[in-house]
Length: 47
Image 1 (tube, one colour):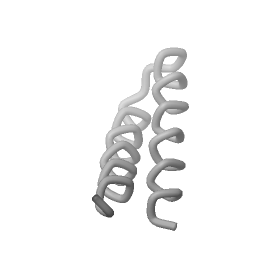
Image 2 (tube, rainbow, N blue to C red):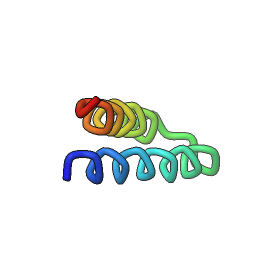
Image 3 (cartoon, helix red, strand yellow):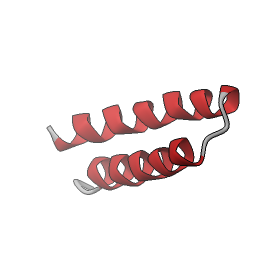
Image 4 (cartoon, rainbow, N blue to C red):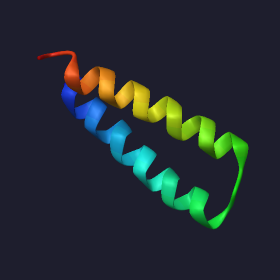
C-alpha cells in the first residue's frame, strides 16, 4: 500500500510540474518538491 501511495504522489508531482510550466507559481513549486519527497520516501522505503 505504501508503494502505491508513493507512486501516486510521484505522478501527482509530475502533473504539477506540467502545471508549473504553464503557470509559474511558488506554491506550485513547493508542492512539487513535497510530493516528490513523499513519493520517493514511501516508494523506496520497502527496499
